[in-house]
Image (cartoon, rainbow, N blue to C red; front, side, top):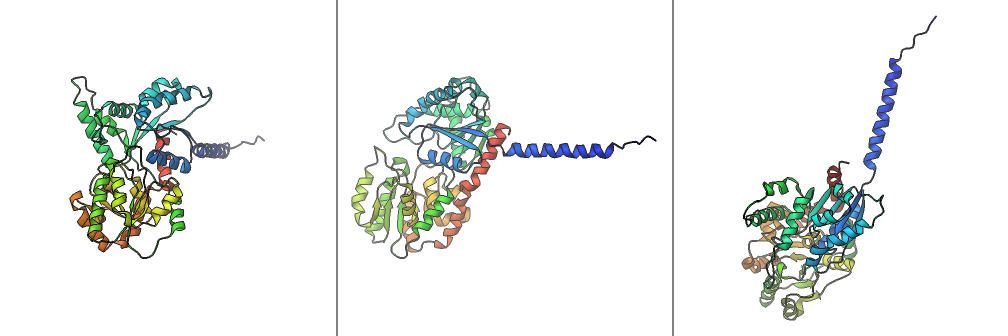
Amino acid sequence: MVHQIDFKPHIALWGLFFLALISLKELFYIKLPMKILALEPYFGLSHRTFFEGYKKYSRHEVEIWSLPPRKWKWRMRGSAYHFAERAAGLPAGARFDAVIASDFLNLPDFLALAPRRFREIPTLVYFHENQITYPLSHFAPVDFHYGWINVSTAFAADRLLFNSQYHREEFLQAVQAVFRRMPDYVPERLVEKILEKSRLFPVGLDGAELDQARQRAGRPAGGPPAILWNHRWEYDKGPETFFEALGRLKEEGIPFRLVVCGQPFKNQPPVFHKARERLADRIDHFGFLPDRQNYLERASQCDIIISTAVHEFFGVSVSEAIYLGCLPVLPKRLSYPEIIPPHLQPLFLYADDLKLVEFLKAFLARPPVEYREELRRQVARYDWRHLANELDLEIERLAGK
């Protein structure tokens, strides 16, 4: 008697076995870390914050190639040559899955000069600022060359990230205006092409670091409110408006203390020296704090962060100060309305510089401290512990991983 074997159950079992193998393979594949090359010609301020934060919290392997934050014009002109030379010196088997760079890199030059294999890698450019709309000082000559580098980089990149909606809109409007200068052969749909491949992505804060600083410093009890200036010591942050307002408050006998830090540069507005003399009896600290932990602890002990900026594409220093517990007083312009939720804007955003003194008098008389935690939760959206995963996913989609 011949026994017949029913193969159907066996086929079904083998099918399930292979499906399980495929699922495991896919699961294992997703977990494999990508190798991402980060190129930063100007490794300072928010540029450094961005890449160090992403590297620290990304699930991928991020390798940073950087140059010191000096001579920004030469960085925009020449960093592509340096990075291309470094890329050419890599072993033949060295591979990256994606390249992410800041707006200070001339991406077309880098891709043209680097080994051919780099032209096959997807590229993402993060726009901290742009040189078309960046405000010039009174003595700086107009030079569209650096703006053209930004435009060429925007066209060459596969993906663009802007740190705020305000920045993206201003950049696209400026690109349109710049190309209207061309007499003929203007690229078609230039603004639409940039818009289609752009996304919004904040700079990111290291929430764990900020939490530790708050715990170490604590909050002082009693005494006049401490006002913080933690911006760059440059003309575009409006220091004249800031110190003039505080001088008038002092003349009217309104109590406050002052902490001035932020990063100075070789050529700084003379108002800082004058303010140090005029407000000497109100100053708790005046000068750059190079040790970051020292700076964060000092900022944690302040009550109010004020901005009088005429230029701001995001506002890292303001966001950090709010996270640390400072109440903001900000102009209702630039990127600041994106940081403060609409229902709180009348309390924390002043209409224009002419109304700043009156706004501050009312604010200091009755600081809306009951909203401190709500504001802190608002900027906690920028915590790298959340954002790193979003950027990982963006790069994975770009690389087809």
